Length: 56
Image (cartoon, rainbow, N blue to C red; front, side, top):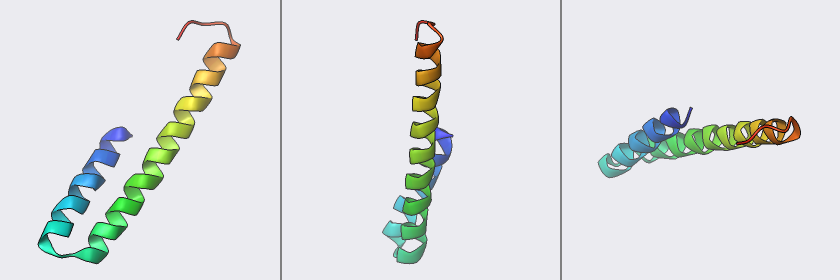
């Protein structure tokens, strides 16, 4: 999932350099959303592992 974030950030950088502001903005927003989803899933996973008594 974090690979998608990097992909969209690269697309946004290239689009920004080439002057495609709309595409760059959309790619940044998609990357932000995917990053937040990945972070939330990581935190949920961490809470479940800690609550079950497993070592992280």
